[in-house]
Amino acid sequence: MGEPDFPILAPGQLRPVADRPPGDTLDSLALYPVAGEPDWAADFPALWTPGEAGAEARLARFVAGPVSGYAAQRNDPGTDGTSGLSPHLHWGELSPRQVWHAVRQAQPGELSRSWPFLSEILWREFSYHLLWHRPELPECALRERFARFPWGRDAALLRAWQRGRTGYPVVDAGMRQLWRHGWMHNRVRMIAASLLVKHLLQPWQDGAAWFWDTLVDADLASNSASWQWVAGSGSDAAPYFRVFNPVLQGERI
Ligand SMILES: Cc1cc2nc3c(=O)[nH]c(=O)nc-3n(C[C@H](O)[C@H](O)[C@H](O)COP(=O)(O)OP(=O)(O)OC[C@H]3O[C@@H](n4cnc5c(N)ncnc54)[C@H](O)[C@@H]3O)c2cc1C
Image 1 (tube, rainbow, N blue to C red):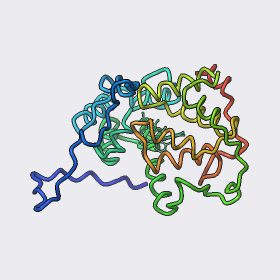
Image 2: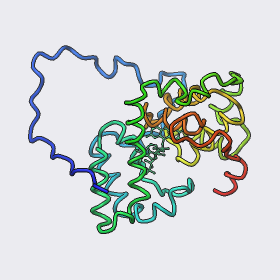
Image 3: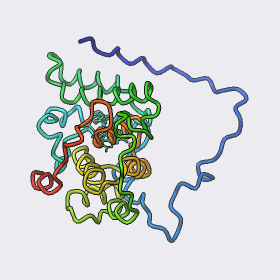
Image 4: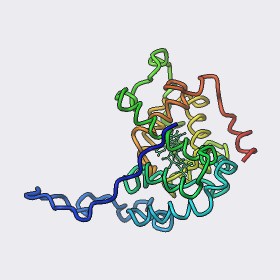
């Protein structure tokens, strides 16, 4: 298999755009919580360092250690075994090529050594490929036969799931982590999403919308493709009869 090209070097200088229209100030967007409302972002600064420097530091930390245990630990939400690079990739603070080659440098030789991690980078590319070719991906089931599925829309059930009050410990822990930290481990995303869609029979679009509002790595391509994968309506999706058992899954972790 051919490997991606090396990333091109950043230009020495960027010429400012002449006659640029006046922009909005960040403060005018009123993105921060206001007094009297829960400060959903209180924990973020301790966990995330937005920007290129923060992204490079996280990549350096990952290739210096955790990457070697990735294959064994990637499915264990109790360890810090994944890269945590998703927000940085989403916001363009790192490119997939940079990540690819940093990992290859850390683990030279046979590609198979790094494959468990690098194949995840390729899942991201596949999601973009899908969104490009099927722009309806965020809204419509890719498999026609699921288009008129009789969901049991129920606002109270959806709210219980959003708030981490389903009664299933692994799901509730994940949903509360999502609210506090803006992130959830992939394994827990799959279990929580499966519960919403396959046990509670809520439309996958409602779950995707909540993830879109709360994830620091919320990404139209990866989020939509992953929700459709869980629901069984996407391309290369988990079959509709594959239902995660939220009790057994929680016990295994
Ligand atoms: C229901 C659901 C919704 C999801 N929504 C998003 C989303 O909005 N944004 C997002 O980036 N990922 C999403 N994912 C995929 C995956 O959960 C996250 O990319 C991963 O947990 C991020 O943590 P990490 O950076 O430590 O991942 P690592 O395991 O370190 O993987 C490295 C990188 O590969 C990419 N990647 C890993 N798994 C996937 C995947 N299944 N699909 C596409 N790319 C992947 C990410 O860019 C990630 O940073 C979703 C998964 C599910 C099941």
